[in-house]
Length: 319
Image (cartoon, rainbow, N blue to C red; front, top):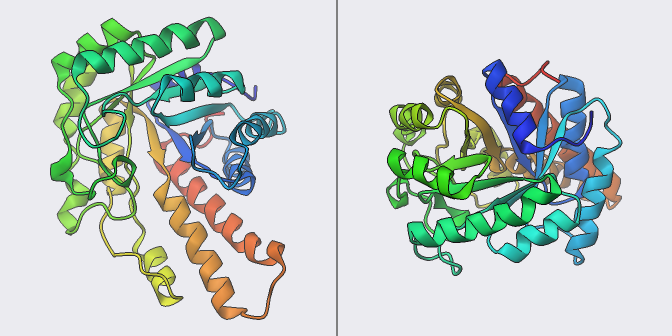
C-alpha cells in the first residue's frame, strides 16, 4: 500500500466521512514517529515537509530520505506532501524528489506580506497543476489567507481573509486542484487566539457552503492545532517562554469534518509535545549528554500526540 497520492487518500476519506491528519516533520526522527503512530493506529497519514524547514543543510537529500522511509511501512497508506510551497520551483523540486503531493500557496505575494490577487493565485496554481499532473502528483491550493506564524503575522483571527464560496468554485474550475485549503477561522503558529473563545471561531457554515459548491473537491483545514496547555506549561516550567494561548478545539474540528473537511494540518501540537518532553528530560537529567536518551522521550511524545489526533479525526482503523 505505502505511498499514495493526496487525491486517493482524500477520496477514501470522503467515502468514509473522516479526515486524514497531515503532520509536519522537520527530522527523520519525527517522520518515524508519525509513521509509527499510523502503523499502530492502522490509519492513513500525510507526512509533510515545508521547504526550508528541516534540520538538514541538503534539502533534496532530506526529501529523498523521507520518500524512502515510507517504503518501510507497507501497511500504511502514506502521502508525502510538500506543505506551503511558496514558488513553482519549490513544487518542482518536491516532485523530482518523489513526493506524491504538493501544495502551492499562491494566496499571498512572494514576500508573504500581502494577499495575492485572485488572478495571480490562479495563474501560479494552474502552472503547478500542469507540471505535477503528468507525474501523477496531486496538487493542493489555497484560497483566502490564514493568519499566524507561517504567514509572518501576529496570529490573530482578524488577520484572516476568509474564503469566498463563489470564488472557491471558480478557483477549482480554473486551476484543476485536487484539494483546496480554505480560510475559515484558523490561524498558524503556537500563539493563535488570546482568549478561549478563539477556539470556537471556525465558521462551520462557511465550510458547509463551500462544500455544497465543491462536492468533488477535498477541503483542507490549515492552522488547526489545539495548543495543549499542559505542553506549554511544561515548556515554560523548564526555561521556555511560549506565550499561553488557545487553539482550535477538538469539538470544532469534529464539526468541520462533519461538514466536509477531509485533510487537517497539524504541526504545532506535536512540536509542543516534542519540545515539552525534551525540555523536561534535560531539566531533570542535567548530566546526560547521550543524544538517544534525550531524543527518546521527545519521539514518544510526538508519536502519542499524532496518534491522539488520528483517533479524533476518525482516521484510526481506516488503513
